[in-house]
Length: 371
Ligand SMILES: *Cc1c(COP(=O)(O)O)cnc(C)c1O
Image 1 (cartoon, rainbow, N blue to C red):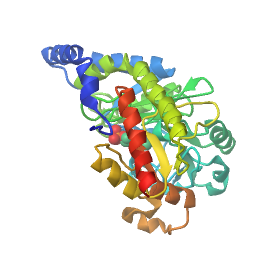
Image 2: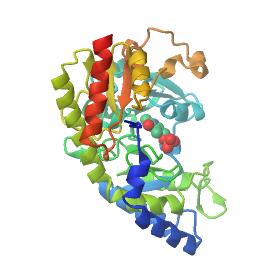
Image 3: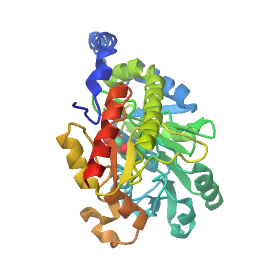
């Protein structure tokens, strides 16, 4: 059997004609930057997450950068985030000349540990970026309580978490601003790069819309130094088709996750720790991430037997070369470092068959019988 980590072709086949028709219509219009399709997608995403506003941008990375700019983060400021995430979370902070201040994650959900937040904050702290890693929300209640008291902004890095929820509300309305990525491998993926910022704050939404076109509201009049970060009409056309199916795909991922839990329990694999669901969370499983012993040997064995896996993420950000100057040493964030050594993700996409799920678990079980 051959089971890739993600099979986008299977998803595409299920809606090929509808997507091609939407692309053709956009080509016939010959309007490629922003425009009515982007506005339609912004409205559809705002309705989907329950936010008052949504602003389309060029990528999830730019969504983070623009959200920080809208909050006024500048050189010398500090922004607290986690080191166990994709690089863009911290990269956006650094690109503004601000300093990422890392705090460790919780070992169960892999998300920001709010118990460590307050002692990492100083008079220079301007914002906090919790990451909803793997499709599960961070503990936003605790984070927001501290942020409100200390009067700093909260930006959700919801790039892996469109459709995820907490206490009945969706990612996208759980902080001051939220950032989404439509990179192809995300739960809602375009045919290239795209992103979105959502917020309930009209002034912040207007600020993002201004900053994404070089800081102008009126053409050739620039009131701030912004960037060029617009969402393409072609991406919006594809994403509008896919958004209608997003909940159905999330249900498929959740059904597969529940089946894995059942299969792993039956296999009695005590050296495999399954994803932990945080209280009040609705998990959409952008990744199904295991914590295991002998991770790298197990991954090789799975590869030899046709099962695709990936490590998200093998090197925490505080130990990256480009962040040497921040002065962090190994051992500073033990939970992030241990996660980087022990975790890996297995196929979870909606189109997987029960036979494929069984094969993945059987192959892992066979490995541990040998080792
Ligand atoms: C994918 C991702 C990003 C960046 O999104 P791009 O669209 O690839 O720029 C940022 N943060 C997290 C946690 C991500 O998973």
